[in-house]
Image 1 (cartoon, rainbow, N blue to C red):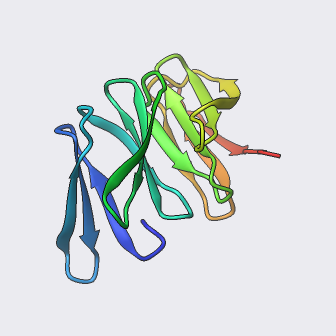
Image 2 (cartoon, rainbow, N blue to C red):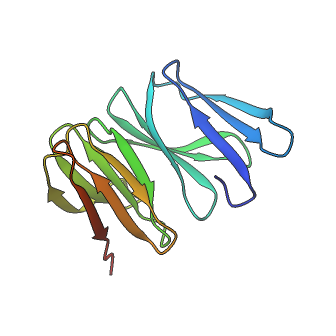
Length: 144
């Protein structure tokens, strides 16, 4: 969900769509220009982060529908946005990474049995991660 209440979705064909939840209508469509979108997260400032199948992390301005940055990232399976604007990602190498959205640089890394696990950000900024063994991890990301 974007801060203004629109829903962002993405798919294997590389399209990103914005939806008006009140009417259920598509209000914008963009092409990632990088293949399948594996993961997306809307940042608190309204930017959209995409993890693509071509091992890139893309940043998009949803107000203009333009890509503002593209970083080499490795394969991203899931993304979560933190309230301070950082991103958390999961990847097939069993790692959860804390990423700087200005540079795409990894700030911190945690290794878990996580190659097909899932990640979700809670309202208080903490993270819930579900790993391959069926365990649920409650994580707090400290970015300072």
